[in-house]
Image (cartoon, rainbow, N blue to C red; front, side, top):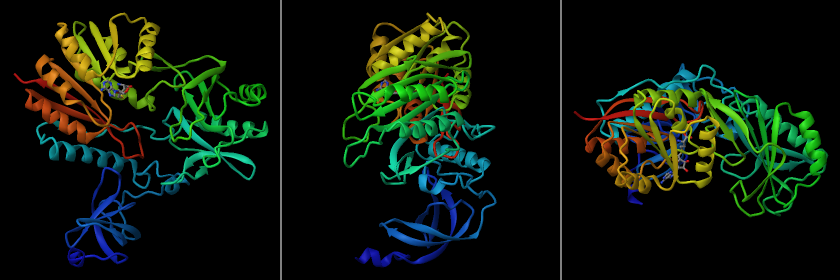
Length: 459
Ligand code: SAH
């Protein structure tokens, strides 16, 4: 009780404060008599009135009531459902400011967590056209007034809100989802209901190849067989240009996980194709493929530049997924080894290597932190190692193996600046120096920022 009394603000109190920073979740940060308040929707540089909603010992949350002094970077979010959805947390900021904020977040993490102040951190590379960039839509389906709706879950709930267009989604995906809602409803398909566990259609997934225009439709259903399949397929194939594949995935479980285990192609091909640079990739219903193909090319080109390949190098690509980076690098390397934990991804990686007639790549299934030490024990030495781990960063055993193996260059691709900073510090402790970090905006209007860092062995 005593501590509560000493806080400079009280619950429900209205305060005025200057916003001085932005969290990695896109929330404004300000102080009242030294006490930190988080104010969603507020932008650094703004002076605002806010109502204190929740208090903890060292910080609190406040709701934005009024902007007393507005940031020149504030813009009207172009998306009409921006606030309900919450997917694009930064749409109220100009795109230039979003990029500056992302660079700032990277700099802050490297300095604070990694104690790295000697590396050049470049300004974030943004998109010329930062809209309509996603190649995959994943939409939960519900019912309203007898029709099918589909869109997104209202922030923090499981209530589906209907959506006609998502401004960061390729137009084709919006069109596919709209057609499915309309046609499926008219042939009598019902939406799955999470509470009663009745109904058929759970999710619609639309994928489009940006360079090929090929479209894949995946219907996740709550039954073994898609009802009214023939009529549905007939009408969908007539209505959607570019459609190459219709796939059904069966998920009868009471779960938030989208996909079930069984996947069947019910019409057309099992794959659609797309290109990153010159490299072709086969995309299946379940395979992971980068969602922003334009910026993926930018990111991988930077990774390739930092790898400094001349054609004689042996390269290891750790956390290789479906081999996207491996194949990109294999064009300029003597040999590339890729390792990834998901067996299906490695099957896709091998297929993609054949598709591109590349025989200087070898893929292995397993944990990078086990496979790479094993390769090392077999006498495999890499000149360059590329890592692209999930958000939690690299396993420490892997970093120790790299330090022992001493590749001349390490290229670290990261989707999380804080684990990047932590891991760079470990590598620096092991004899590496970080020269440059290039943030790339793979997900405009969201808070995410991807980075590629270039390290080399000291001396
Ligand atoms: N480089 C790929 C994928 C990066 S995402 C691309 O650009 O497309 C990170 C990948 O790491 C995922 O495919 C995930 O399955 C894999 N992964 C996670 N933990 C791993 C581990 N311990 N060892 C190897 N791969 C792992």
